[in-house]
Image (cartoon, rainbow, N blue to C red):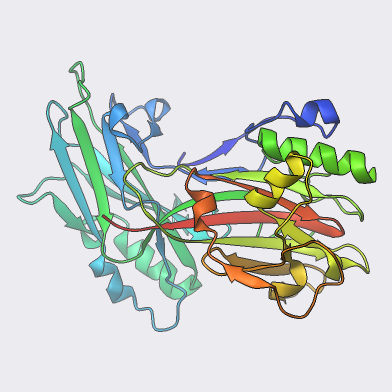
Length: 366
């Protein structure tokens, strides 16, 4: 329920590329904080990120690096959940934390289905609770001790209200202490992949679609979707994350899973917003990130697929796409500013099979 999959259909012709802006496609996953302000009916849930919807969740989705060296389950006591109501909003009937694996974003398995911690009829003098107050806490500790995976918590809650709510009637649920507030967007898969690559039709902004059209007209190389093998063709997509208005960016990473598709893999490169916008305007796409400057590691047990990560606070850049690339980049830059609108255009060109891409934006707690 909390991991929403948005679906759509798109093709890669010139006309259709210009018409599929921001359509969510198969295997595109955004983790949502879902809060119901009407009843306990799950069909009434909506993503709670703004005061205009009479609720806000602060500090979640929350990344818990449970696989980090030295992590101990006793550290879970540091995570606090605070529930505040203002105006006609009543206290919640229940609050739950849904648990997902990072970076596959699949639900963590529990003894009776997806792992979920739930607090029924929360009440107390301070409105602040710890994980030990939630049903399922022992299941969470057992899972962490057994599996050793990083986790993401999202919030779900139900408020039964019979009042006509005003904008000033607000419920606020805040997670603080242990972990990192994040916004995430996954296209395809970057962890625990199946044996064969799935084709994923990604969302594309208008600027990115136009850039792909121009690249195709210049080289007659038709752009493809994620998971499509081949050479001499670009792969383009747009990551979209919901950034709460009160959130401040602290960092971001782009993780990807790929397969080199040809002998010229070392000449491949990545364009982000600045380069994509230049291509869309009919100019040379630059700056670029040379894939040879990104550390790649073979997937465990798989010698054909590789994982890589780019830190947006320290991006290696080449000022021109001219190849061959030297051993070191021209410069390194902080590109966090390109993520302030919650969108990131990406084009990978052109002998790489891109299987999946995960954008994680790290936010400061207030």
